[in-house]
Length: 107
Image 1: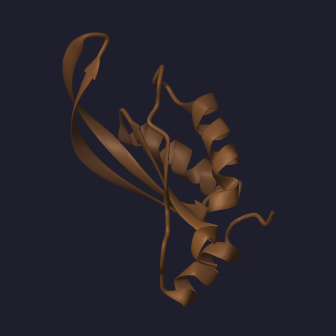
Image 2: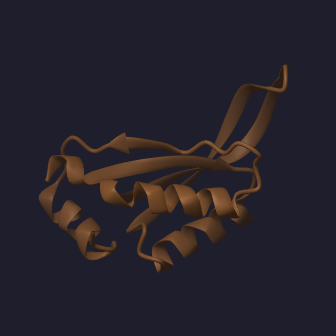
């Protein structure tokens, strides 16, 4: 059960895109929950240091759905190279993880 769950991170430029992506991921059952947090990012892009306001999406899902989530983000994202990072869930509250299972697609 431990390695069955993951949090996938991505960032988007604005709240509108964040809400659109989150709703579609949950509707498709590729995520049980998506949290959206405003952040300040500093990064290097095409040899320039950039500073932007972004929205960080924390996508709560199951590890086997990573490829589906990645493909979906790549298809719908406005960035040329979007951040798409999966973090494994090592432990979690069993009733919460059961809820994630119940609200995402099986294998």
